[in-house]
Length: 300
Image 1 (cartoon, rainbow, N blue to C red):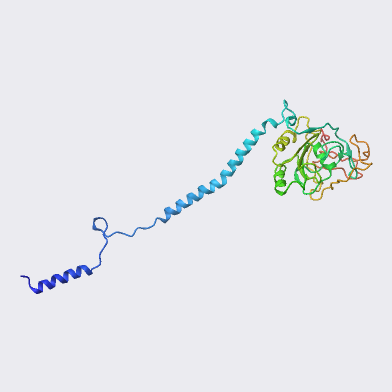
Image 2 (image 1 turned 135 degrees about the vertical axis):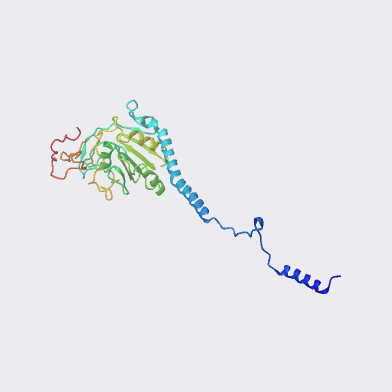
C-alpha cells in the first residue's frame, strides 16, 4: 500500500507538469521558427506588374493610332491622285468643279465680286493667306484665301453659328501641322462646313462627313494639274494670322472687280514668290526684288 508521502510526490509532479509552459515543436521536435514575409519578392512582383501596365498604357494607344492610320490610308487609297487618276474628286458626290483663269491680282483695297461663296477661284490679292496648317480664329478676307488655293492649299470654312467648339476641334485636326492647309470661320455660310481647293468645292452638313477626308486626299497639293502654281510656297510670314485682313460680308459694290478681271487696277503689285523663300506682296513702290546670283527666276 503506497505511503502518503509517495502520493503527495506524485501529485506534485502532475501539478508541475500542468503549470509548465507548453512549447511548439517543429519537425523532429525542433522548435519552429517564425515565418518571415518575403517583402523583396512581393516588391519585385509589384514592380513588374507596374512596368507591364506602364508599357501597355504607352504602347496600346500608339498601336491603335497606327492601326487607325493604316485603316484610314486603306480607306483613302482610291482618293490619292495618280497619273492615271489625276483628279479623284470627280468621284466624290457633291463636289462642284469650275474652271478659273489664274494669275489675276487685285490691290489690297479692292474686292472681287466672286461668283461662289466661299470663293474658290478667280482674281485674288497678290498676298496669299499663310497656309502652313494655319487655323484662323477670325474670318479672313476671301481675296487672300483664294490666292492660297492657287498654291495648292485646301481651305476649310465653317459657319460659326452651326458648328460648336467640338466641331471646330474636329475640323482643325485636318489642318494643324499640314502644309497647304488653312481653316477659318465664314459667317453666313449656307452649310455648316464648306471645303475648297482651286476650282473645287464641297459643302457638307457634318464635321464627321467622310467626304471631307476624301476631298483633302484628292486635292491638297495635287501635282497633276489640279491647281495652277504647283510647288508654290504656302508660307507667308508677313500675313498676320492673329489679325488677318478682315472678312467683308457686305454686298459687292459697282467698283468690285469682275470674275474676268475687269476693274482690277493695273498697278496691283505682282506676287513675290520664291525669292529667299519670302511670301506676300512687294512693298509699295518696290517694282521688283533682285535675285541672288545664279538663282533661277521664280516659277522655273
